[in-house]
Length: 345
Ligand SMILES: NC(=O)c1ccc[n+]([C@@H]2O[C@H](COP(=O)([O-])OP(=O)(O)OC[C@H]3O[C@@H](n4cnc5c(N)ncnc54)[C@H](O)[C@@H]3O)[C@@H](O)[C@H]2O)c1
Image 1: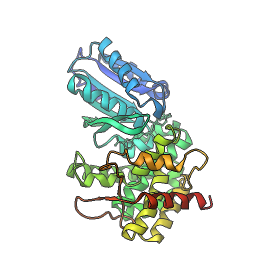
Image 2 (image 1 turned 180 degrees about the horizontal axis):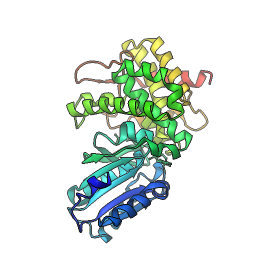
Image 3 (image 1 turned 60 degrees about the horizontal axis):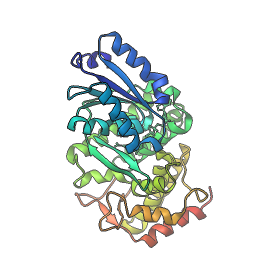
Image 4 (image 1 turned 60 degrees about the vertical axis):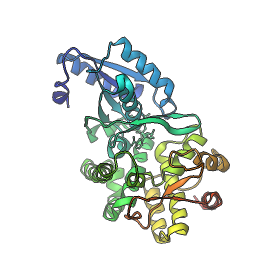
């Protein structure tokens, strides 16, 4: 990675963006190393956490780019999890109408999903990722060794996006995740690399066919209509991976009724998520169901204020063609959520 970054034109700032946790662990050292080989490298940090994936943080980063004299030849290196990748990617997308960004994901979730595909953005209090842009990274560098320092809850969150990739496109990967769940939970590097690579291939293939989500790319949103509503309704107190886990269980329950997703597959999905210590029961104490239902109306896929869902037919299979999202009655959504409240943990 350092060798590749040395190709950056001399005298133009290379700005590493990182949250304060990852800066202390990795980004500061990387910045020093890049400076030592003659690059004009600088570090810009922000406080860790989803609540800082905001317009305010982006504005502060822009002020820093201005202070550093960053012009069109400047580049940004996003070192961190999905929050950093989305925020730094969006900053790069709009700075001088677009400068290069390199993604260096340091969470499992960002390695297997968020760093790839070019979606960047920030949240509003009322809705997730509502302001953003498509801006592809010029390179992505991932090293599973850095996962050693990731706290257990953040680590487990990555499996939510991995399970999603398997459900939407690859029944064999789903089986491999079931078989390898213990090794993966232990952070076995070989199994991790294999699983991450399979997820990235799935995402790359989907994105290559529909970069700007005119149609098929929406399959990547399985579980996410509910997840995003849950995150904003909870004031971003629920981690993205937990929200995606719950979102997939709710949406798979909707799929059973709407398009015949097999109930045995719903059972397998819940068991695998539980095996990765991901939540499958509704956090009744934290979120009011009605707030989640109303937040789904503001989802980016909603049409005319009515939420749409990307639902699987069975594990490994989504509907063919480009028309992959479906409108669902809010009464069905309420019933699916209430079913999870009633279930045993
Ligand atoms: N752009 C996309 O296509 C896409 C896809 C999926 C998710 N996302 C976004 O990704 C975000 C979630 O990403 P996330 O789960 O990586 O969250 P995150 O970036 O907040 O990282 C989670 C926590 O782990 C810490 N951390 C990161 N790397 C570490 C390391 N190696 N060691 C120790 N601590 C480390 C961070 O400081 C943070 O506290 C959400 O905002 C979601 O919307 C984007």
